[in-house]
Length: 350
Image 1: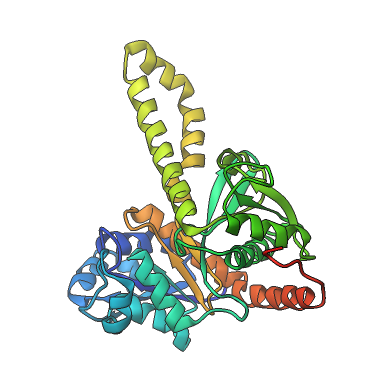
Image 2: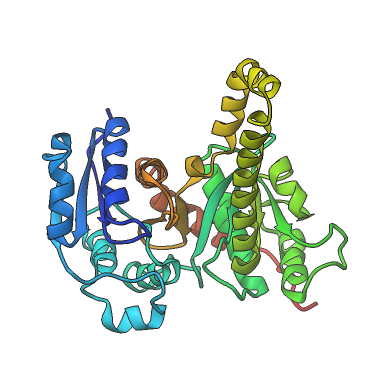
């Protein structure tokens, strides 16, 4: 059992909140009995759900608010009027030190805006990025940004590369992770100005990063590099495409094995192997995107996930806290920045 950890939960965030949220907390409690939870939301809806699970009685505390952030709310509107919402209060609990991290399945744009406003960014970081894990042929690959920043310039991409590289070393334990920029081709002349300029800095800017160069979409699942860097627009499309492909493949396999008696018999022989494939590619296992670059731990769960997926998002937050991620990335970024300042840099536009 690990050291006691408190996680704040936006109990009203997500497509199926608060039911799925409470069920997710229950599943997480089985795996993480040392974790305590502060649930922010409508107590009239949360308390009846908690009474169904007596094991959560001494684990969860509820802080009441009837305000919540809807999935279609504009981030600017939430910043102006959402300070009493379950999302804002859950993030604020981290800033106040009541919780070590926050998990929400709510509106992504609003959660990023609130988290950036309340928790601030780490020194040297202009924009936080959403990072997630992709299963690959070689294990797992970190990818960022997955939707926080639609428009990115070369400086943003370089900062994402730094944060992803530090994350891979500090949390995944990789000694010298490789970093690649997602592009439409591997040739130097391919891509837009931001991608080509970022590649120039990463390749020739004397940063202590093992820069692989450009990677393409098929390199993600191949595990060509340990860290894939891209803008939030492209990254979010890649993420949703991968999730949709996994669901399509699973559905197609079920239809194929139900097509005939012989197919059903074949399924009995292949069931064990197919279960391994299903577990390896289940998007719920990788649910829980990390907001890198903030002054506190914040994890975004998929809005449409189920209890199993939400429990995994909680596990991501607990892992980041247990690894001392923020302190480690802060020190590593300071080291990288001091290193960069002492070295001649190539101008992005040269």
